[in-house]
Image (cartoon, rainbow, N blue to C red; front, top):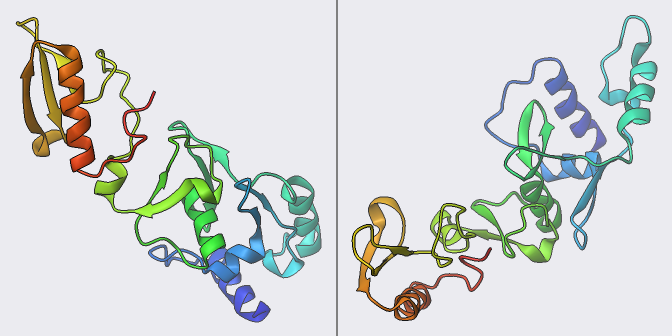
Length: 203
């Protein structure tokens, strides 16, 4: 097993170009310590064979420097979109996808949804593998929304409320209502019929 990992890692650092497939779960486990209950992941100490030799310090020196700087520290940082991400083999991966792979033993074939809407909450109980369509049925309310309810908006010319469900070209018109409460109820019933997650439209 170790010789296989060594070959995989060495191939990468000497010019590995197969970026179409993610690293094996076995290799992930060799590199990352993970706690499914908290969602925390830290870098494991790396052995000398994982490093190229440096003319001044050699492999041992490079290995020592890396372990001093990174071993035991968080493996992922928060990006501009609010997700934890990190580099593996010159490619960026979301921490939620890596933790899912480490916990379940395989990379998710679908998108990963943060059930409670907190992008930084990578506890395994808060992660589920779903289709893009299903993921869109559990999204927070957009900042541009002014009514307080997703899919309900004030008519630009009438003192009434317009109701839609879906997004873009797939939006479905659900009617126009004088009463705001009625409009909200129409939207919520439509969400139930379309199997939206109960957290959809949260703050």
